[in-house]
Amino acid sequence: MGSSCFSRGNKKLVKVIQDYLKEHKLEDEVILKGTHCMGHCDKGPVMQIDEEKIFHITDTNLIDILSNKLLNEDVK
Image (cartoon, rainbow, N blue to C red; front, side):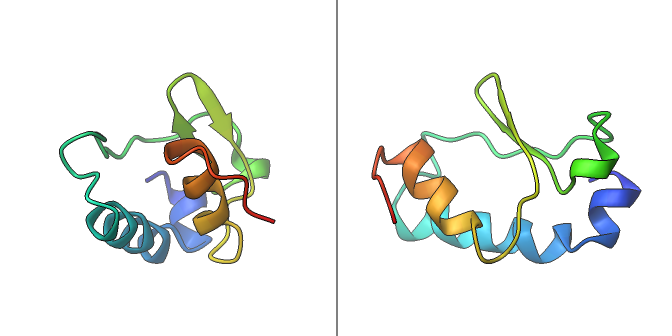
């Protein structure tokens, strides 16, 4: 939710994540929370799942990342 990531489309990405969690009935299993700068402004938007930071999130790669990390589906 830092200014650099926000300016790169974070608001839209948060909505995609919320919709994904709802669609896959994961709202009770996944805690979605925003954070300010993670210190990787040149690699943003950034999200973290468990301890892994994931860089360069876009609306194009986000669903694949979520499917891979949350559902263990290897999407190609």
